[in-house]
Length: 338
Length: 265
Ligand SMILES: Nc1ncnc2c1ncn2[C@@H]1O[C@H](COP(=O)(O)OP(=O)(O)OP(=O)(O)O)[C@@H](O)[C@H]1O
Ligand SMILES: [Mg+2]
Image 1 (cartoon, rainbow over the protein chains, first blue to last red):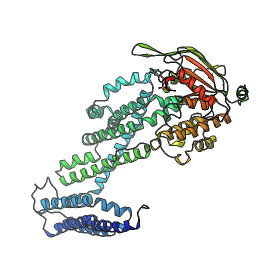
Image 2 (image 1 turned 180 degrees about the horizontal axis):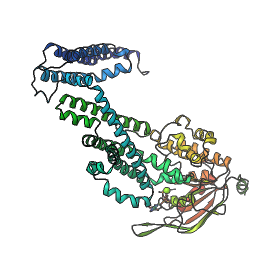
Image 3 (image 1 turned 90 degrees about the vertical axis):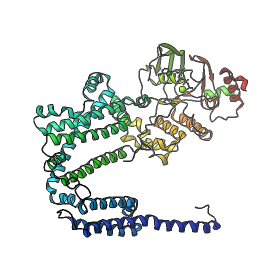
Image 4 (image 1 turned 90 degrees about the horizontal axis):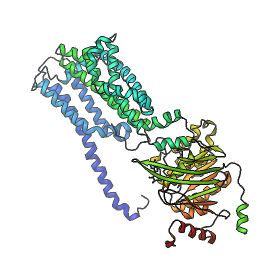
């Protein structure tokens, strides 16, 4: 900026005005469009009569119009709202797309029944599930989280310790490696029938299976991470007086951490699969069970509602894992953003 | 003879240790064949002496330093520090490796603190870390991570990481190799000042003949692989030395001749 001479300022004035103008038609424009689309959604709920019997149609319509008002307000005062304003501006195109999608969905199901009805419930019937069936849904969410968290923590801990041990000690590796090769690649769900009658409760059986599904990838990646640490790091540490415990805790483990997180990520994915199957088959609680139960009653809206919650939970868990990784691995450059 | 007495006038503080390398031979097995690397190398370094090793690339200089550090055992012969046989690494002999090998997950400060932390004395000695980072001129980068440093800065961190341990023997494997010539000259002066103040014994590998002559009391010229000692040359000049010194220019010509480069000069 300091290199600009006086004569340059005149030249830069015009482009700057253009930028402000494109701002108005660009991000304000998109925000405006988002607001209009949500208004359209709200009006579509209220204007046409429902083809079925749903109790939340007008609440949904009013809610959509309130959202439209919020978007409108947020768009024009984005500059004064700080981070929230910026976030809204960034997501405006998505708000347009999502608003359009949900409007179309509303019209195609509740209003004109273009899609076969019981299988494609309208938005208001899903809203109805969230308001009227909330206690059962929340119970299921907590049951799922409890089971998943317990199994995942056990699996990740055992996997990490096993991985470090076999990466570090050849003697331990000699005994553990063949077992790992034999049992590891088996999908954890294959153990389901055996686990459910050998374990005292279906809950402990499921915890074991989730731990197993998590433990295998964590073990293998921790192991390969520890094994691939450059010997130059050990040389440096040893000449500086490091003892074996220091070499493991302060050299091998931090150096292997990027691999460990890949293992934790893979373990999370495969443990979700086991969780849902275990809940459907054995445990009489949790979102998997809720899905199964809803299917039994042909309650399709409940199934969609549970699926949406499940997807938010899984995505949230992965976000949490990535946030933790970014925290711990700030020293790495160019890590993937989730 | 004035020159000679000047050299004798240098007295070494008692901090440095004596290093004895006796009839050391070493070899590596590569694909079933044996590659001899060191051939009957004997060298005795007095406490507080500054010895430079010169030799063609791949002759075995870094290997000799690994033996001194205790990271490897020689196939035959023995190495001793103050009459104690070297059987493994010890923080009294600190190495600055050819490659800086900073720990990428540790900040500059934590990298420098590594030795004190490994020996369990960091809590009481934090000021030493700060002081040595100041010494290598990286105070404003103390919280930076290695991937944020230039090659020369990384080498200075590696040097600081060694110096903070107050070693008796400092082993340097081309520690200034990646520095630009200005920083390099400044760091050479810094190294001499530090060595004179602290009095540690120094063993320096370099491929820069001038650097060897400006820094060392003695220059050892090694042969092609397997390395043997070709010449052991005393550099009897007081510090600070001047690059234009005709005495050093003479030695330089002589050493380049030993390295098979006389045609260039
Ligand atoms: N761990 C090893 N295994 C097998 N061969 C090795 C090993 N380390 C070194 N060598 C061999 O020993 C020889 C000497 O290597 P060294 O690193 O000591 O050379 P150098 O004198 O330091 O060379 P430079 O000046 O290029 O650093 C080389 O031929 C190298 O191939
Ligand atoms: Mg070398």
